[in-house]
Every structure is written in structure tokens, then in C-alpha cells.
Length: 114
Length: 118
Image 1 (tube, rainbow over the protein chains, first blue to last red):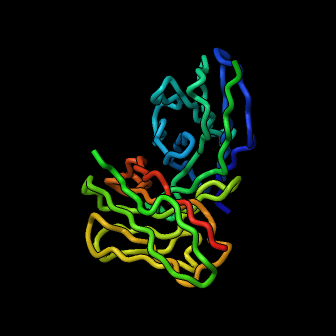
Image 2 (image 1 turned 30 degrees about the horizontal axis):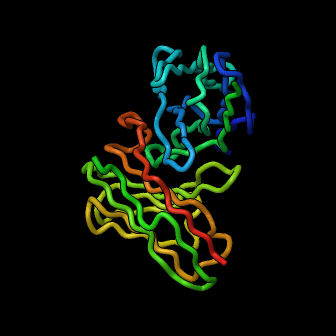
């Protein structure tokens, strides 16, 4: 069955340290992939997306993600985390019934320690 | 810019009551969606609409109904509320279908409506 998996429920990173959030997908073909961020009490905001082409995509707020077909992964990275990055992060993919909205992973909560 | 506006932000219902969550967008988007978010479960698609007069079920439609009489509005109706419907509900819109070859992928979300059923 189609799925998006985020293995880490909660991650704590020191301010200034690097970050990697993991995302794996299960699909029949290469899906369209996205990362969204949700700050407390807010809706979700798109960070970046991958459709095709260059497997390393740049997003807003200094985030990037790399698509690896061989590992069915789309991990989110940031070289230096800021306290304001503390939020919940969701990986999402197009539903296999093409064009009918997105399915989301369960999310990873990022805490930033000083 | 208002974007996607949801009302109410908070509501407590008794079991068996009904209510409507309102959603309006001012971006002239054809596509609109309702998701529910439960702790540790991510977002689940309830219903979506590809234009006025056209709606379709998502992953978890049972206990809900929607209508789309205008491009701007996409209300979600809860009939006979149950404790299992306690959740945070998000409305979203997009200028194109979220996926597929022509999809932009960018959903614009409202701030959410927190519903508790007791």
C-alpha cells in the first residue's frame, strides 16, 4: 500500500548544529514529494518540493532535500539550525490516484536546544 | 492577504450534535481540501473539491459531508458528532491539483479549527 514514513517522532538538535530529517516513501513509481513545516498553532507551510530533474532541491529558510530513488528516501537537511526552526515537519507525497491531493507522513517534531 | 480563513477556531460539541466548519479562500483557487490532524498521526484527507459543484471523498470521509456552491467556500459538516471526531481540522486550497504532471504541490493552509466532542 502507498505510504509515507517518517521514522523519527521527535528529534532534538543543538542550535548551530546540522539537521537531517528522514522520509521514506512506498510507491509504484517515483512520486512527487514535498516537505511542509508547521509552527505551533499554525497551519502548514511548504518548504520545498521535488518533481523531477536535479535530485537536490533547495527550499525556503535554508532547507534542502535530496531525493534518492535507490533508497526511496527524501531527507530534509539544514547545515545550521536556528532556535526558530523548532516546529513539526511533515513529508508528503502525491497520492497514487494521481492529482487527488497529498498524503502526509506522521510528522517529526524538532526541538532546538541552546 | 487573508488567504484561507477557517471558523470557528475552537468548538466543544456534545455527542450527537451537528455543526459546520467554515472555510473561505480569497485566492481564486479551484482546488480545496479538508484534512484532520490527530496527534502522532499526521494529516488525513477527509474530502476535496476540484471546483464549484464537484467534491470527492478522501481517506476518512465517514461522518462528514461537504458542499462547494462557490469557488471561495468549502464548508465541512459534521452530523451526529462522536468522540472519534475530536481533532484539529485544516482547510487548504491550491491553484492546481496537488499532484500529477501539472500539480504545483503547494497547498495553502488555514490556521485550523480545534474541535472537541464530549
